[in-house]
Image (tube, rainbow, N blue to C red; front, side, top):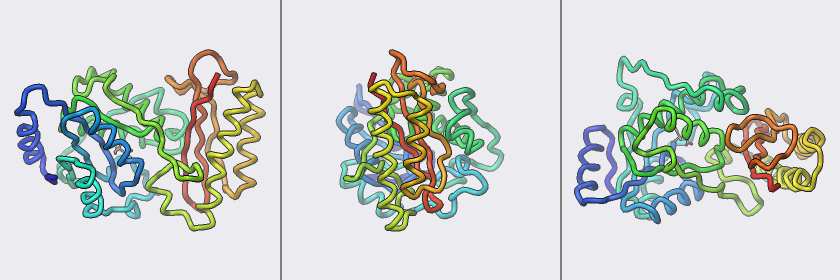
Length: 286
Ligand code: PAF
């Protein structure tokens, strides 16, 4: 596997990969601290493309002033070894100066789908995500890109950005969402799970459990308000300190729903435990 840290080296390496006509290149954007969830994206990408490019960049623009940018885990050598083991050909690992050279002045803001849920609690977060992902797409110009459904709102923001800006590489319909990978107790895998103490880690499994129960109740016809109130109460009883949101939303627009309809619906939750903010989402069958 080749690791490249400058745009010039990236473009040279990509030109070599594209030398064979018809070569399909997949991009898996990450912030590193890789776990099984990322490796699942890589395996999906390998199954569909001839070459997989993984990017590792802890993007300062998507962290708020009081968030965990400095503490965010960085382990490039260990991540590179994992990717090599998965057969990745190219690792794009720019530093902040390569991604945002002096004078960088552009911001991409996707209104509507960015505004509620995590966007309400983390102002500017999705602008930072949209801006860096647009840059990554332009840098690599992949035929397809893979993202985890764990960050469901992020996926919606990126698809909207690609559609609205007429991006061609990848085309919006080649932005592929991959189902969330879970620990054996159901907790969604996340680089932030490592912040949890053993006690909080055990209690955190209440999140997917309560969401499964809520999803089943909604599918069986229970009222939305009452079900979401029960879900919040279950989390607080299990040791979560607060619930940022617990929402039933239209799966495409993320607009809140007060009743289940024939359109695909998603249950989305963000809640805090021991100072760590966990998010999760699940489809609600109807
Ligand atoms: O999901 C992430 O790891 C990041 O938000 C992403 C998409 C790599 C952009 O920095």
